[in-house]
Length: 100
Image 1 (cartoon, rainbow, N blue to C red):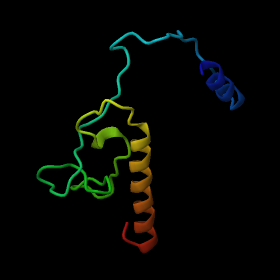
Image 2: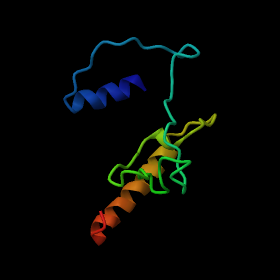
Image 3: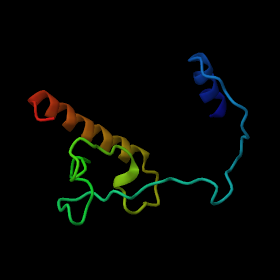
């Protein structure tokens, strides 16, 4: 996989800096940062609404793993992508309606 990614990046003009290819990564050497912005209906107990907008500042939309207050044992990348798509789709609709 390293080779394929390097080919794609080089073809797009990216400069590849030297790095160490490690297989597998040592236990504890890779982290998946998540949490910090609980999603919910009540601004007293959550930071984000159901569209990932901050309760207190409506023009801030969190489109990363911040809404995960606990980390599941499985990879969350596709869930993050789906939540981001959903939030952006809602934001685009709000712009279309003149509400944003």
